[in-house]
Image (tube, rainbow, N blue to C red):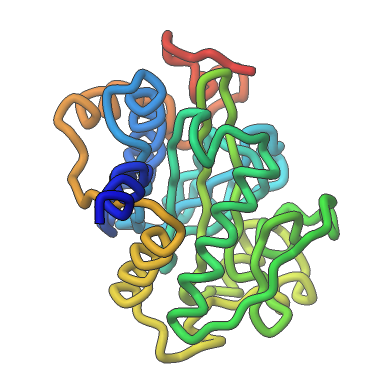
Length: 279
């Protein structure tokens, strides 16, 4: 019994922030604020699930804004926001987005591919518990050069029925990392073509998880993520964002306003808060 209790006490604690919808720019600012607090050791490593209260485009840290139909986005009132992490463009609205912030310690002391693989296997287990039996991509290369995140696949990403169902990217610092990812629930293909100036063939390869598995429910999937974390030796603490984190996010939010109507030089790059320690 003593040995069992000792093993339990060694389980890594993870703070879990449950699914809520927020403003697009606040979503990105909250992820950055959490990553700062985690890396400072002020809060536990944090897994956060969230949604979007209106349509928005996010593009990767180094993606060119020219890959987006800016005139259409301005006319349609769709903000285009640069994520702190890499990857390609995503049209958000009916999706589940997640972030995971952690110091480089315990199971997550490894490199980008190692930490990416741990999180991918956690999601694979959660999908399997939901009844969705996924395939794990092992290739450490991008399959194509599309401006659309879900028209391309790379290492650690999960597919179901030969369709990419989750896209993720990391931002790494000397003392920790932030991983963000998205699972489309349904897909508006007509809007995708207008926003990303892509062809019908590209768009027709993209599906939401509910189009592939119609009994998918966010609440059930969220509980299965918790089960997967526990099965992999993590202890879950369900908590809300701290007031100090929210206050910092509100300061950072101005860095995540829409890129449309601005030049790249005018747009302050995300993750330039004074604490940053980039690798």
